[in-house]
Length: 196
Image (cartoon, rainbow, N blue to C red; front, top):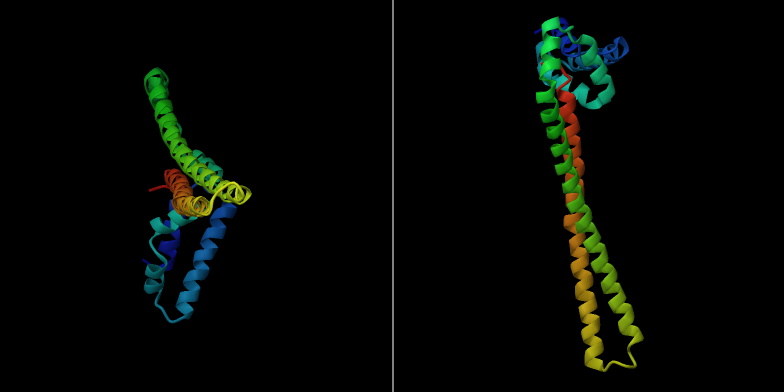
């Protein structure tokens, strides 16, 4: 594949994007090819080093706002024939609720996972606050508590503080996992709008 075929393949994958967005993307990859060729690579090596048109289209789609991708897809969509419109309208009572249910279930599962993460974080914060309250209270109770009881309260306070602090680790991991999952979902939706 030569440079022209490579850039044409990328352009075909991004069919429907605005002229400005398409020019930006193509100029970036033209420049990347030129840089590699100047470094001593052949045209074929430079193209294989950059990646396939499918990979590049997926990268561009990942960086582009979802609204632009949807409008690009809508502008390149073929017009429906009369019988296709009739089938869509007649079948809507069947496929409409199924599609709506699927979207709601996926959204509900995602929200449920976030609620677990937030509950874990709230539990960790409550445990830490309780341990701090126990430590502060033990100093106010010094005159009323004997030596071994005071040491036991301090020890319990520090143990509970350590447990609460350790709970922050899985909370942070779960939080970043959910953020990454949200990114994966958005990239998956964007990929649906990039021509195969």
